[in-house]
Length: 216
Image (tube, rainbow, N blue to C red):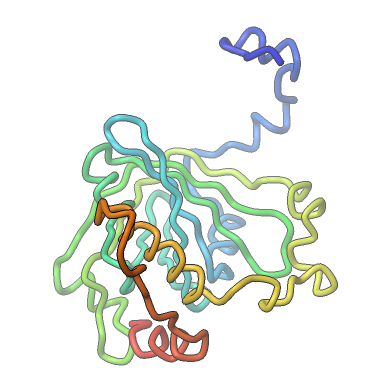
């Protein structure tokens, strides 16, 4: 297996993008992009830290939860796990890549640009739900926007009901976390003897109810 180390070698394998693939890239959100975002309940946020370590994080809410105009958009930051991977990366580099999805639609929308974190009360109040405002709102200045073709979704059959995987095909989230956390605690203890570390597994039902209580 040969490792490809430069773009010339890569292009010899793949060639160059066709005219439409290049021409479709915009420096703003046109009416089609804005309509797509208005229908989207889900966006993936890609970031990297100052050393280039990358991260992708999901954001979801009711369709239209992202407020968009031609040259910028606003994404409320709902309660999460407080790791803040995306936000700390943005503090380091000020850049994001976004991928918007619409259920049932195989095409996606890609948006790249500069990002900043805002916490002024008037702005966060715009995104309050049930009287609960997000702590911060992410403002993205659009530099690139383009629609992405459907091939990946066609191959994966992501929206095909017949291709859905039963939740029971995997352990519950609580069971998986129990195994992962218990192993880490055991390793951090530095002990290979004595009683094993026991971490209780939260049931799927209890986890879902806990999430519902802190969605906003």
